[in-house]
Image 1 (cartoon, rainbow, N blue to C red):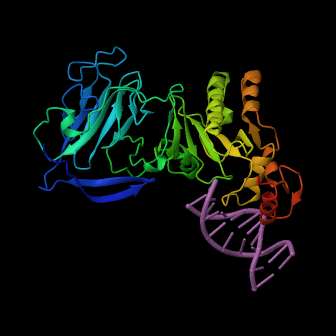
Image 2: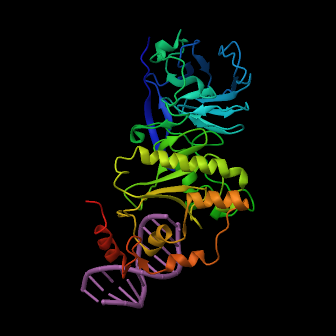
Image 3: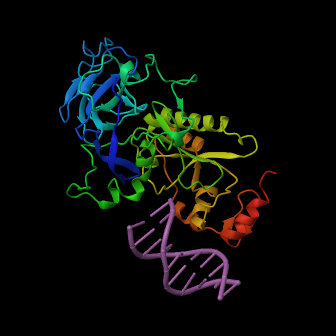
Length: 372
DNA sequence: GTTCTAGAAC
DNA sequence: GTTCTAGAAC
């Protein structure tokens, strides 16, 4: 077997993702792409540069599972840039690194990432090699592995132990890389465009390096600017812009989000000595519903101003159970008038209610409440 | 959401 | 003089 050697010539970063503009083989020829069955159930399938291939249940993949459509995915390799695009055509979920692609959506898959054809089953990876002779088996291209689900022992969730070590990216893209310069559809507002700061969570939640837990309904990321020693965000995969968009049908999802939040505490080494709250900002700045799971020490350099403080220590912060109760009772979540004014209230300790004149003084005061 | 900074507060 | 905040810009 020939060694797989790919030399990256140029890389650039977009939205925190690194894109390699061209892979060059030692001979200077364009690499060849193979889709490799991770459980070695059939020979690697060659994907020709920029030629679409539809795969699913059938003799080529030897998948007989009826849940898998005969046309489950459309694949297209970019041998120059070293990735393939995967479009889910079938109804049942195709996953990339356990993240659902979604019917009609298209994502990229790079070497090192795992594509599961349907329902977290039938795993594949992509390989780029200078060798044009089709290898006989996956074992020749990669370490053999058994066809199996990657599920945790508790339910369907997956705990991601070392998110920092994850080198693969998963980003939703609508066409070939490099990422296109954003062209806004006519009439669209810049403030709602994908690159706007308020859309940042949508980007972060898709980034495997940010994810600390995910299952079929939600993903958990660490808050990028934690306001306490522990600060996670639980986000649904479903795009729900804010509390305003919630309806009765979301009750189960919100209960699941709370359960997942509670699960984060169970694996937190300091959960026994810190108090936590699970809740939502009544008027969030960031788009996409997110449940804050935050320890009540508020011991963090990212907590810098009155807005930060009051957003977590006044009624601006609504307990998860209250949101769920409201949704069950009224079928929607309403925010009291004047809630935004709460952000301007004087700085008051959430534990002893003592007022503090400035943020630095408040932070000094908070130290007196820290567990020893 | 964050960063930056003018000017208020001390 | 320094510290800190609030609001604009992103």
